[in-house]
Structures are given as structure tokens and as C-alpha cells.
Image (cartoon, rainbow, N blue to C red):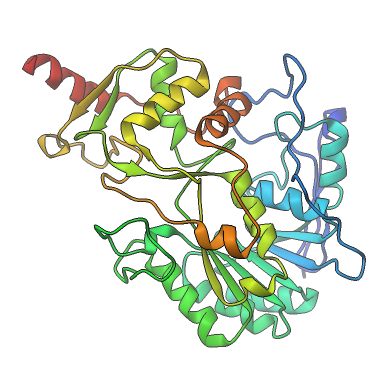
Length: 387
């Protein structure tokens, strides 16, 4: 028999039940940020982030929405928008992390309003029988699959929800076959051997099942709470006043998209006939070189322009450590289809987006991973010897 577990928080501003159940859904709790030294205080006033130009749905159009994942990064911002627009939102997670967390700049009242409306279904998506039973018992109109990696994880969801109105899937631009012809378009060849092949197989499954699906393919995602050390890698080095090692010429072109812009794109496809059985690239509107990104991070964080040291990765054995957070190649995609079909466009340019990330996260002393300069030291020591 399913068991209800209620955990009461001790701080007055963080009160509320954290309730998990296999048989019933109850509001999630207000919980402390599960990270390093998170501090809600602000110097000066900052406006909480909300969707610009958002619409409020009527009671008749409100959807019962299941978000697979939702306690990390993308889902945190997406669930905010879904609740703002009047939908009933349930987060399906293993319950190992706090179900909600207060965002920087978000008032206690705003957070309380949000967290009181979010429901939590505790379970492991790898437990396919549980997924089938719990989802079929609850019934959902729409599924946002944020953390799905393999097609086998999706089949039980589809089986449990035969009347599902829409399945919205977070894929990746990493599925595209490497090419000299860029940017990548949604119609470009894909790589069945890529490390994201599971996402390709999921897209194929959704198409074969005849469900109404939409797939979003982000490039590199950045922004507050980012658990992938994209901008954080640069901020650590800038904060320490260290040179920034960049592979090869530094002229490799890439692309970043802000998590809040991505969340808005996810909202734009909801119930949109133009998004039916379609794939959309989502990222920033401009491309940037590796060197340019290092300089942009410095400008966004208020640091002096950094010293950049170029190196040949083939001259080093870094073992299992990653010396640079980006793939060493040109990698960017066209977002023209999304801007045309979805009436969507990025709000953040690169500098303002990086500043938003820095001011609301790293600049406040919070980060996902501690600095590790061991590969940098290998590169810099070799550079000194060869100088």
C-alpha cells in the first residue's frame, strides 16, 4: 500500500508539507535550495521573472499537466509559467531533491503561491509498471518530458494515457550529424550513433505511435541554476583571476540559449496546431566564438577582459577530466522555424542573459560544482615551458 510521507520545514518562511504518495497527489512544499550557500537576500530591488505577454487560460482551457522531472533547471522555470497560466501541474520525480525551490528575486508570497499549487507524484520512471498504474489512475491531458533519455522510458507513459492530447519532449540539437554546412536546420541529417541517439529513438517512437507530439531541440542551455557547467566554468576562472584556456584557435562558433527563453518556447507549443508532430530548434539568436564567449562572460560579470591561452588538446592527456565545457567544433542551429511558426523569439541577448545568470546565481555565491583548475594548470605549465 502507498504511504504518505509528510516533512515539515522548521523555518517560518519555508513552511508547508512535502508530501509524496503513490496513490494520491498533494501540494509540494516550500523547500530550501539544495545547493551551496543559497541566500535569498538582495542588495537593491530585483523584479521576479515572469513571462512577458503571457496569457491567462480560462477554466475550460486549463490542462492537467504532468512534468517528467521539474526540480532542476528547465523544469523549475517551465513549471512557474504553467502555474501562472492556470494549469494544474504535477511533477513526477524520485523525491530525492526538494520538490520546489525559491528562485532568486522571488518574494516569499510569490513562492508560496506557486508551491501551494504544484503537485508531486513520487516514483522512478524506470519502474514501468508503477508509471503505467499511477498515470492511468490520475489521467493527464499533456505530458512535458524534460528528462527522458531513452524511448523505452516513454512507452509506458503513452500506454497509460491513450487519450493524451500532447506529448512535449525535450530533445537536443546534439542529435544532428556533424556537418560543414551550418547552421543546423530541423530537416538536417541526424546521427544515429550520437550520444543522444536515445532522444532520436524517442522522437521516432512518438511519430510511430500517432500521438500528437512536439520535440524541442536546444543547443547549449545556460542561465540561473544551470547544472551543466557552461557559463559557470568561465565564471570560476574569472573570479579567481586566472587565464582562460581555450582549445585551438578559439574561433570555433557555438550558440547558447537562455533557460527562460527555452521555457517560454515550451509554453508556446502547448496546444498549438502549428507545433503538432513538429521539431523545433531553440537557442539564442546569435552565434559566438569560444574566445568571444570568454569575453562575454567577463563583461556580464563585471570582470576585466580575460587573458586567453590557446592550446592543442592533442598534446595533453586529461584522463577522464573535461578541460573545456564545449565540444571542440562549430555547433549552432537555426531558430528561424520557431520564430516563424510559434510567434516566439529570445528575450535575452548573450550579454544580458549571462548577466542574468551571474547576478542570480554565481555572483551570489551559489554554484553547482567547485572550481577544479587541474587541467588548466597542465595547460598553463606547458605554455610557460614553451614560452
